[in-house]
Length: 246
Image (cartoon, rainbow, N blue to C red; front, side, top):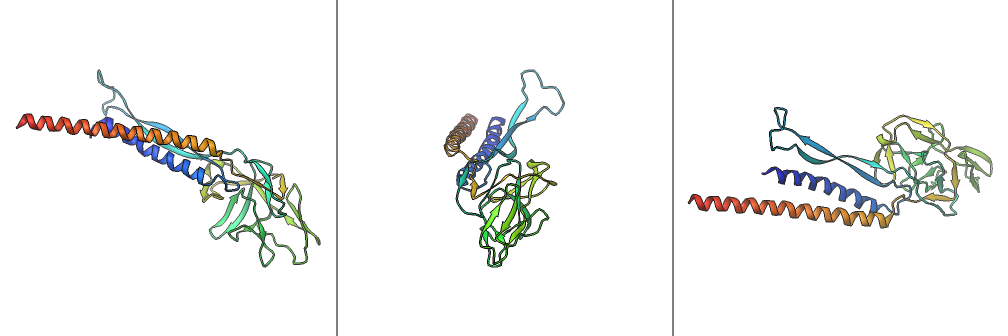
């Protein structure tokens, strides 16, 4: 296979990943706390094995998707009136929930009370307090109030304080679905600036993502046509050589 086709195929592979990332963003545009993903492209250079490029030669540059990262900007806050909906005013703060796989960070703040009085999310994962323990309320707590510092109080008095942390390196968080992130880096307690009765929407801008999808698709189609045209050219050249040989 000729180098031009190989280089174009490297771009196709990277562009396919870009389409997948953009599609994931669009699919999670309505997911509370979701952070849009972005791709980081770079060149992979292939030089002549003996060092210097010969006269008339060029260094070959292949496209590669180097990494995927998350935009850290906070989404729009939306009032819900649900006393157990929690939004974080600090864009660097995260809540912690206990999942079956272990503690996970999240900014999706929709919670409710389980039958045992534990504060849980839609998956039944318990919200953890500042000591890493599940927050549990008393059956007699008819009303719940959440202060800005995370203190949770019921009609019988304080229940506990909701834990809010900041990862030392947010780039090392691994997304699990649209709401949870595996903690692959140390975390530090930080003020969360909690807002009761509100949710943080996804920071995905739907119109922007649709435009990005159209651009990615056009680039993918253009590269596909380039590969097909180059393949046709090579096939034609081979046919002519064979006919002359006959």
